[in-house]
Figure 1 (cartoon, rainbow, N blue to C red):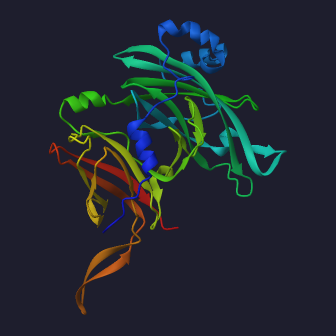
Figure 2: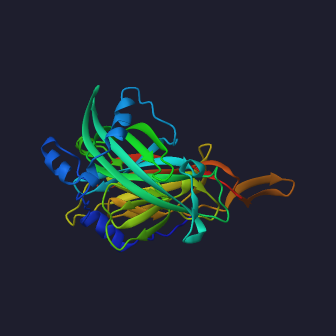
Length: 351
């Protein structure tokens, strides 16, 4: 099956040539920055009572569940000189207590404040490297509001490679409810992987939409349904649930590729979709001269099936069934000969 390689040139140029992060509110804290912390309490100081709650559960990783939430995933994004860790949590509408707004009859609204510490983990030692607060204002349509429905929320922050522990509190300033949770995560040391003569990728994710913002957003930030990256709003496919005919965009960075004299790479990627490890669709191999990959993935509506009956043997198109699938990505760097396989599980629904 053939598919088109469609990309936004400005996006590629920004990501490859000028990846930068605004650290005006987000640089990981060092010991000699404590004076600067005091000058910027709004950005970096957690209230004492909330700090005490976070410290209280640190050893056991036991959270306070008055406002229940847990981080369950981390997306690692490339950036110049560092990485962006986007931590993902799923929260139920009822737990954020969306309420009517006197100025907006069509939507329910909620406000939250987020407080967090990030510790670098070395063996059993914890070293505090960041202490911040941020906020979020969210809306849901009032007409079809479901208090039991869940949404993904994304907390973004820049960090170098390493192992980390996030201690996070989310509070509703209106209802005064507050919850805490703890989450261990790791940002791979891509430089070390490359030095060992291997290929690796940043996080692979399927986007249902990407929108350009007017200005770059500072870190930390906390968003519903999307995360910010450079000057873009990136909307992941929710829980990788897709429908036949969808065309999400796959994005990732390949580390460890060789560059030619023109500072370009020669990467070939084979994509296919499998169910129970059986190929349903194999796409035409694609070539790239940049290590940043942006590739639309058309989700098929039908598959080829071999039929044998009293009418003979033939190939027919049949609708794809709902269920669990995998997008399989086989990467080859033609300049070095290195190869790498990656897989993205997704669920196909037909309703």
